[in-house]
Image 1 (spheres, rainbow, N blue to C red):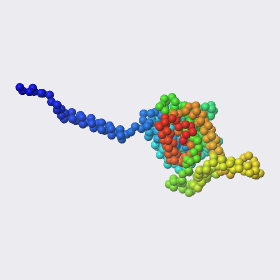
Image 2 (cartoon, one colour):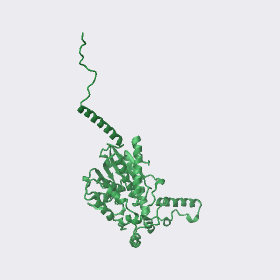
Image 3 (tube, rainbow, N blue to C red):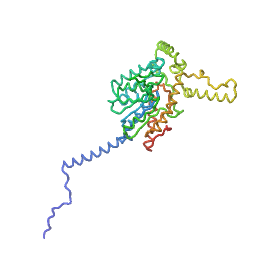
Length: 396
């Protein structure tokens, strides 16, 4: 009896060449995807939108540049910006896609470059016309209008006659910035449509409210009036030899400034702002000088020195000018207003730049201040991404 024929085979037929190619292609695709995911890890802020508020603070506003750079590097998408004074300027440059041009310009400015751009007038309503600076700003921005920007933008100014905030959310961008940066008694006001417009910091140095309507995933505010950090005062930069004026040109230019300054500033204050040999070291700021004088007065009073019985300070010996006193007044006002704004509308993330990191008019320190902004934003984001909590108004 013969065995039945078994047509079934336990051996699997090898795939055709086409099937083999498909299998290999699938394997390659999986391998490439795996390698791609290894090479490009997900950024912490990937897919998250940010509404950014940039505060007022003079030259410290350069820190906004560094703060924005870090946000972008971590993958956050900025969908709205509000700002006043330098916050409005830096925010406007970013919204218009001109940040690189602006950064390249300001990082190349030395002390004499800044002084030559100030367009000093020392008239009754402002020490600086600002036309030289704003001609550069207008050239960078061109005819861009606020309503045509790719992201929502608000510049905040103050109407001196109506005593209220003015929000620029349409119209020429350079005009909005010009109105917002007109520091009272320093930069001449902008007169527009019957309004006399000056720095928005007069009423709102950290304008968070305009960003709320953007419905972003998080609101980030960069405050330039943070608590003092005695460890981080940025020293005066040295002069770049290539950027200095010729000796004759220097003397001629300084003579013009001296004549104008005599009607408004103390000449000693001008020298501290422009001399090669005079600089402000830690401990020699106007605040520090006043604090030392007050302490000395207290000690002398304790010792019952009859020659120092009067309740005042010899201001002439302090070496500070009218501008320093006025600047201290504005800084004090801004610090108080910022705390009220934060309490009323707390942001999801608050980044504080210490107000003593530099003087408000140290516009020749852009590289150092940009780096400071990077450090502060990076530290704040590290805390936020780890704990999902705000930095808090008194944090670094």
